[in-house]
Image 1 (cartoon, rainbow, N blue to C red):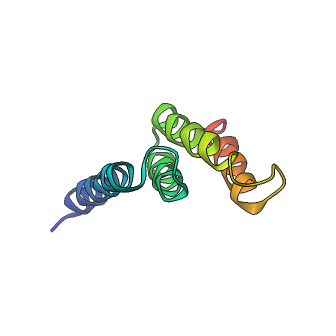
Image 2 (image 1 turned 180 degrees about the vertical axis):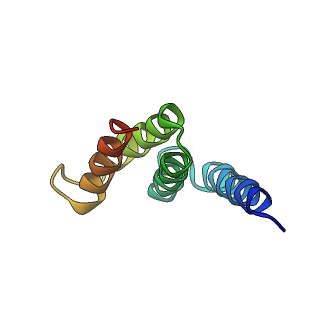
Length: 87
């Protein structure tokens, strides 16, 4: 399997995890937020700032319901969003 096959498989697995979490737990569940966060990181690593910001924004919206603004769970999203500005 070459690199592109692994990349495609990784994206498909992340998207499937998001689908399953949304279906099982709901769109506003913390596990769903984690799926969005992981997809955001994936898209940062693959140079797609717009998709990254979309998923990171969803993760931030969900996590803000459960965590204070100064928590690590929130700050890690802000850090990832900052990475998008350098792309």
